[in-house]
Amino acid sequence: MLLIAKAALGVGVTLALSSAYVFREGVIRVDVDEARPGGSHVHFWVPATTVSVVLHLAPRRHLEHAAAQARPYLPVLREVAKELQKYPNAELVDVRDASQRVRISVREGKLYLDEVSNTEKVHVCVPAATLADVADRLEDVAPGV
Image (cartoon, rainbow, N blue to C red; front, side, top):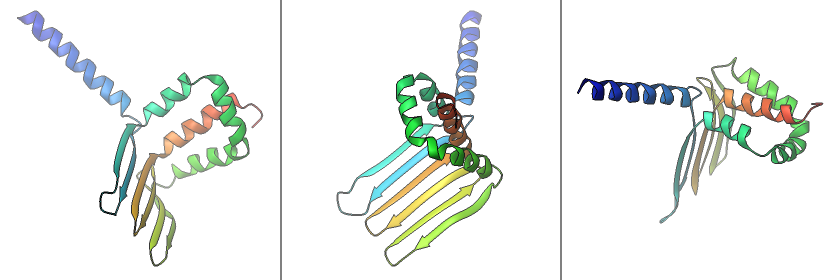
């Protein structure tokens, strides 16, 4: 009986530490809701650590292709990601008209992109550290940036 209790404790601690590691960078959240009858509702939550893992597992040729297309923007992405971490709470863009509102803000180290219109609502939340990881990985496979 004591052996079973020790095994259960070991499994529990392993699960807790694994969860803490996976969720340490935060969560990427994408929510899309259509306002029409029968409209789609998509709610997608992924640990931000997944992005880093996928970037390391992706075939190099695909990363090189992506880096080649993003090459002119990589220095800007790196600097923006670095600067976003300095501003824990800031509203960057807020545009409104009669039927639509777009807001880009930083709250608690996460970049929020919100678009609300008469037909749909789109909310995206990405940890700023994830943007820095993407920029770093793309720069690794695109030397000379």
